[in-house]
Length: 184
Image (cartoon, rainbow, N blue to C red; front, side, top):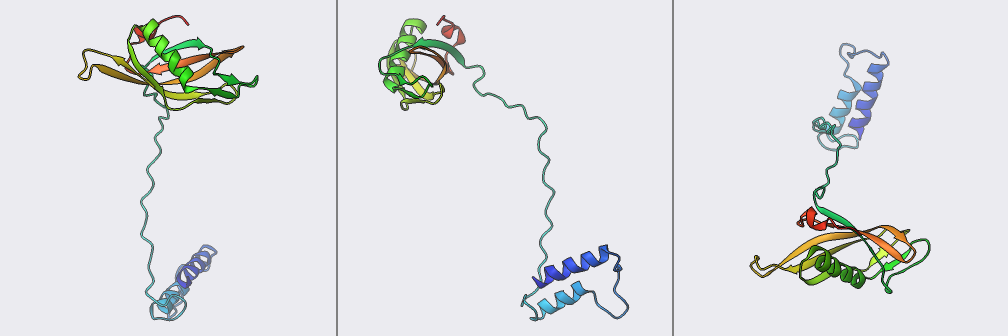
């Protein structure tokens, strides 16, 4: 502490025109403070240490474009309604996972033409002011796979609403976009 105070004082005095060099036969206050702390005097009681010089920080990259890792994933939208969906006029409520799963089975079987073994969503979708998002996966039969099935992992997001219906946006990487090109 004494070293830091002495160094700060010496720097401030030299900056104010106190002179760069001490008078002949005198020691600077910083040198005196260092000697006091290294010989056991003062508050330091031990050898003074100087912090290691730090390396200058690397410059931030100037390219701030974010890349969407799922930009080329198959996307589509679909309108749905279910008695299990409960939301108020402000768009707050719940879309049960079982409702989303039933819609996924319908879409994959009737629109994409895949035989669904199971559709599972992580949880019920909670809606806040007409926004909701949920992770879901769909396992389909696929005779070309070792286990005879393949699982597609995707997301379901609410993007619109009308009366008691909601419009989902489905994003499923791994499915060809041409298979998801159907009218909602």
